[in-house]
Image (cartoon, rainbow, N blue to C red; front, side, top):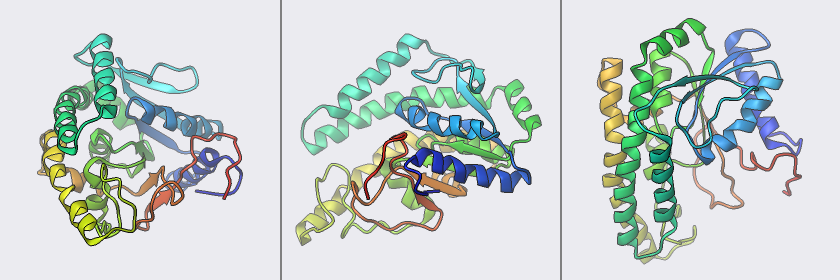
Length: 288
């Protein structure tokens, strides 16, 4: 996946292409993509273009209303309707950006992000619900016989669809809210040297900083419940069995993580976690 071409996204596309070829038993495979809007899509788009140039069939499933996921001549797009307007989505994302970078104490930021997360989650949940309940689109996807599904698991709708279609899934992400990537993969996440979000700690902490690091994990219990529990309920109803979000995410074959140990502090990884930092640097040469 990494290689030394100076084009990390091309190297990663090559790795994904090899995976598709192995799954398909041919030189070219069929990849179903369930993206997440915003910057998540912008970083994924270059990888998809490279995969298509290498002869793979790439099909993107996306809502008709979005920020950046628009119909393209270069990609096969399967669009589906959603119950909100473009104006409503724009207003919601602008509010999230404002809240994310606003100042305040730790508790103030947590409460503000909690409220915003509930509002954003309702919009994304509606998007996912309309995808899973679109019987005509699901029938078309079932008949297409894809080899794998690529998604950003920050929203688990793609994995729900992968479970329904019995497809191996590949995740493309930077990090999960509430550190769900650790829970899903059973990866160690020791508070003794892995700094938590908002703490401003390094990987060398005093005893009191470590205690504070542990305490900062507590609000995640409420945030995760507000954001992800509705997806667990939706998935359970759609798949016809009781599931949890960590249980869904644990089915991923590969986690492509857009991090590294230069800009990020070292931490444990699982064997199916691949670091692909630099994926958005295009053709620029990267230093060691």
